[in-house]
Image (cartoon, rainbow, N blue to C red; front, side, top):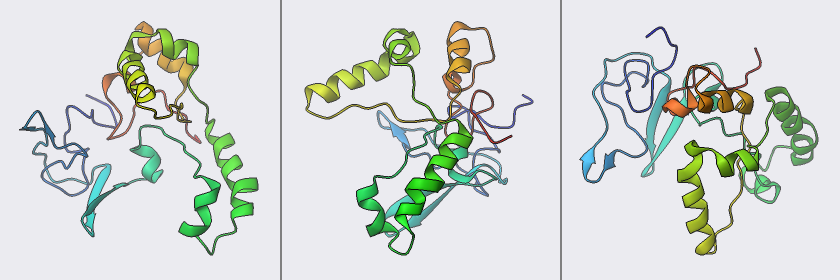
Length: 178
């Protein structure tokens, strides 16, 4: 297909790191397995078992940002010290997180577009149910080029994020340092 990354719903050799079967975060749907056999290859996503949990890791320059759906979440400061007690939190929050977010062009989706475009209907339903249940809703900061995604939704450019290119990388529309 000439693309660098595989599609989440159509995994192939590019999907997993030295595995012969995918190990998706959701491996069954309505009781049917959705993991698929793939040829052993140095793909983009790795999964390791640690103490009863599966830890997913991006394999490539960019690491987790290649395979996390473009999310660019800055950790809550109140939790930082408990997780990384030897790292200077002040320096991280005053220098390094802002620098990374600026360099990657981290932004959030235009709420008006989110509320009107067909491709986010599922998310609007989820938001409604979450709010009814008392859970807060927020837009996750991301490295997506929202102008490109608007073009994807309009059908004027090749689809990437809106064609399920998330878990195994995204061929178009993500911002990078290049």
